[in-house]
Image (cartoon, rainbow, N blue to C red; front, side, top):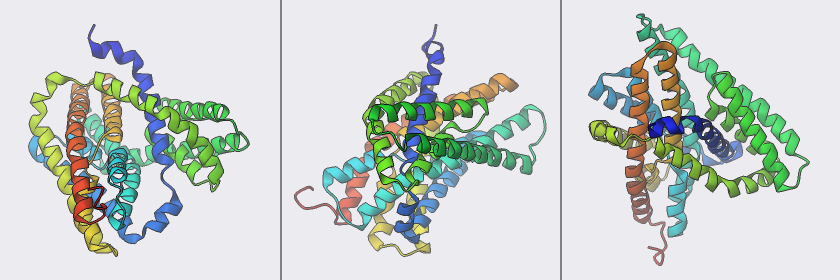
Length: 364
């Protein structure tokens, strides 16, 4: 029995781990923090996320002439890795406007990345189903499907989030809060799978409702025990992601990986430049922010796992071998390119902070 077949029964663990990752991302999307950022940084977040998306879609399509594959790769591009960027900032003891901008952008673009992936994945699946049926998918139903999926995911997550806040409001013990939290994530994940919704968006919405409940003590009581178990969740998550990686496919995907790296990097850096034209942004932020947000890891790998799982299901349901090929190609390429971005990303972040003059002399 192959390793992939052996770990197939463990796929539910990946989904649960993704649920906790998404909840954590949602818990960082505070509306009050977004208001404090200013219009310039908000424009930058949208410009660099959509810049990476469109450039990767265009680049991969020029290479492969495969639109569904190109859309899925584009949907992976906006996601970043906040942990790597934050670690560099803390290690260098950096302070200043670029540092504040880095904190803001890497925190919010993951949430936007998940929404872009929701639309992109649904659009790509609609195109593949249209190909299988021998018809060209009309624009309106193709766009309507992801809108309904995302809308229902957000509504479901919002209702579960409200119930969760209600249940834990009077609890004080970390053990009791953790039990209710597990229940909320499992419920959101289970309903998402059952109703064919986005489990990442649903769980992200649960965290979003929590952090915007305006109960600071409640947020702290929930997040404290969660942060203690997240290293274990990430360990499980990355082990399962690595077990799904097909090393034999890496050489064949070399050009695809190179195109993805170049398209994503150009989209991120160029998007920062473009977004800074629409709002007040300091020159050093405009000049160096793009280099500081190239790290990519957990969220992108999580989205690629979701893509592999969903496209394998599409193959089984509609007899679409091409869907399974897309899923494997995305997971293998993204997992491999994340290694590159996690090596070069922190180096460029430190370089950007140094050039901006935000690293104290003793720390440099």
